[in-house]
Image 1 (cartoon, rainbow, N blue to C red):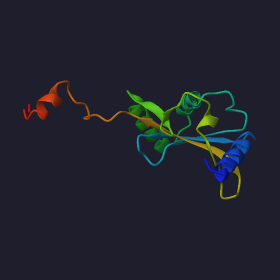
Image 2 (cartoon, rainbow, N blue to C red):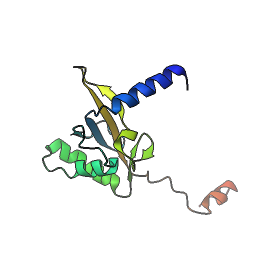
Image 3 (cartoon, one colour):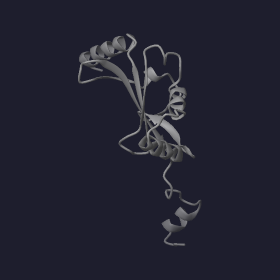
Image 4 (cartoon, helix red, strand yellow):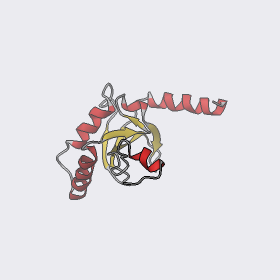
Length: 138
């Protein structure tokens, strides 16, 4: 890691420790929009990212659009899982968060979480691949 990258990482870690608000966005599959929830500084400390996601998905005061997004998320979670930055989300939110800034210059922690269901149709039956490799097709 270069000196500049190390310095930037140290600055980001220091800023994260200043207790910034946390914004999580739970997105269904590869969608561009998800459910957004904001946690004030201190409200998310000591909680796993999974618990925060579950809390977000239990919200009752959703708009019609948010209800549709929630349905998509629940469909993805049926046999799927939560991922953030390519990893399952079993640690603290701060481990996945990046510092972002509003147009007004206010900093906050942001974590995008995807509800991903494995793709269907990619399954290869046992033994079929060997037969195809030998030129026999079923």
